Image 1 (tube, rainbow, N blue to C red):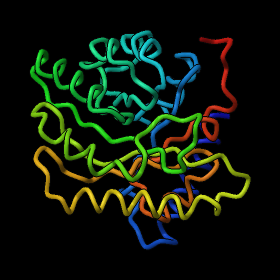
Image 2 (image 1 turned 60 degrees about the vertical axis):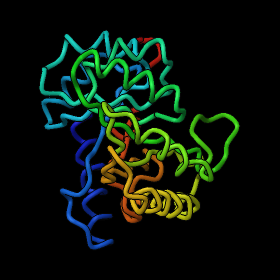
Image 3 (image 1 turned 180 degrees about the vertical axis):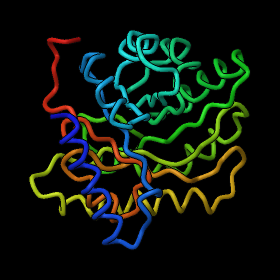
Amino acid sequence: MLKENLASVEANIRSACEKSGRNRTDVTLIAVSKTKPVEMLKEVYDAGIRNFGENKVQEICEKYDKLPSDIQWHMIGHLQRNKVKQIIDKVCMIHSVDTYRLAEEINVQAKKHNLIMPILIEINIADEQTKYGVKKEDAVLLAEEISHLDNLRIQGVMAVAPYVENPEENRHYFREIMKLAVDIERKKLDNTDIRVLSMGMTGDYMVAVEEGATMVRVGTGIFGERSYANK
């Protein structure tokens, strides 16, 4: 069933790319594997997926050594400063940077490992109380502050749009996210190379692709409902 789900998601992404005049290679599909057992990840890996997203540090650490080394792990959930050191050498990108203090700690740990960590600034695009992320009006200022940290590279922005029944309702949020990315890019900041728009999930990734997403984070659409019993 996972292969069929994956094929369906892939077809949808291709369709959205064609509709918006984009190349399929412009969009990276991240399989959001939170709460899913290693066996399911292996099946998706065998179907060709190499980018996996996790919300929790503990899950990345538990799965990291049990799966092939060519997997690109993305930290997409809220990250506490005291846990940065556990994943700094395991992930290819941290999507959820929403404070200077977190960025500062990532920079410290990246220096210790002699690496440059790609990050995205997480934006709370709809100003929802239950979600993390910097307010949209503060996003450019945060980028300016973070840009002075030498062991980070700001590569774009990430956002979680509101849950809606009709994905069209989120189109204007995706356009706002794109605009913020452009605003940051125009600043020509140090240690900044805006190339990533991480937006769109199972319910709305086709609209996100149409509006410029370069990374979509799909969990339920590939793996089915979350399996908290498997944690």
